[in-house]
Length: 192
Image (cartoon, rainbow, N blue to C red; front, side, top):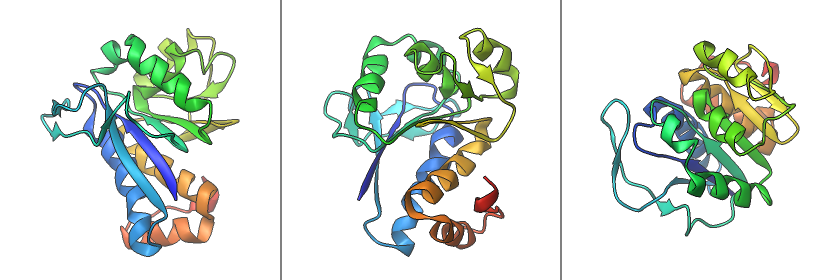
């Protein structure tokens, strides 16, 4: 079973994390016990997303088990989250054994602040591309960009594409495409 941790924080953009959560969890309806997706926060208390969704974390940064995949979403709250030493330490600690370290939208800045994008190819939300380039990142305008074990996804809805990309890499194109059909999302996973 692949364990995936999605970091959340106050004012996180909901679709940034709900999109990949849906795709990466839905595989279990097609092939049971494929993934375990955890919502990870600094504390166990409920927090509010940017659009008002109340989020109850599954685990904390401190208590989170080892992850195979880390997902860092963005949103208005990323300004504080990217400067939060607990989040930065969590990403670096988990990255030591994770297969993939990923981001959606401005979640790329959580990775950049941890020093993980320096000299790498990456993407983010279209209005933040220049800001990301200031971290010595080779900015690419694409839905999903991979550089080694780091995978970044562009704007808000591209978290869905990130989810399908990860399913393809972890479980193969056929299974990823089947999940896309089941949730009625029109995508060619082989083209990602």
